[in-house]
Image 1 (tube, rainbow over the protein chains, first blue to last red):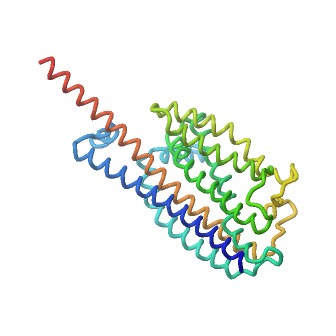
Image 2 (spheres, one colour):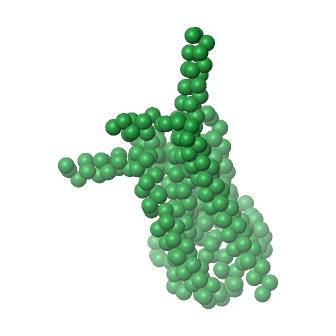
Image 3 (cartoon, helix red, strand yellow):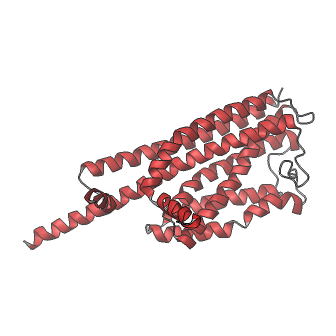
Length: 55
Length: 259
């Protein structure tokens, strides 16, 4: 039964690390999207976006 | 249009970051959902599977340790293919794929090392030995850290992309070394027991949960990679737009001074 602690530790550390990784990627996505929105609201457009709009 | 031309046209269309973002956006909920579903089934089966007659309950660590180790190598192989995409075809998304994959690969490699160490203590009587398998995986972890640092060290994105691609390709030599280390050297780590020429040596009652868990973690990896790639494309757009905005402001300032 003592070996149960090793199994629990392995699963807990893995869940924590993968959860942290997923949260970091999600937060990064959100931050980039917000920065893009702010720039667009200020009227800044990418060159390709302006071409698409003109075409 | 011939088959090859058709395929090239389709790949070129996918190389457009805007199309890639839309495709990844529609694919992600399905990929994420499938990953969770397959992982629940795989790990559920893993805990319902019988214990190993020698290792007892600690064999449960195998259902996460082995997929993490496979993914550590799969991620690096994907990065090496992306490196070729950067150096040979100058594919616009290849560097994005490499840069986004590196931290995910580093986490899975670290987890393979940590879960292996936790499994080693009760089974081998030690947390760590410097045998060929453990050492070569540790070197893989260091390679990931080096690539992460390099992709973020240079301001010039195209120079950083080339440098990271070259380092990734040079480091790829480590992947066959990891795979065959248990055959080439006398290691404390056991030899391969799933991908063998003479077939798996694990009983099907333990093998199936392992394979299903591995598919689940691979789907999870692919979902995380697509998410990280989307974030990276957006980051590059943000920095390009900030540069444009700064240049426009400078131009206006110069005009104001001239008049």
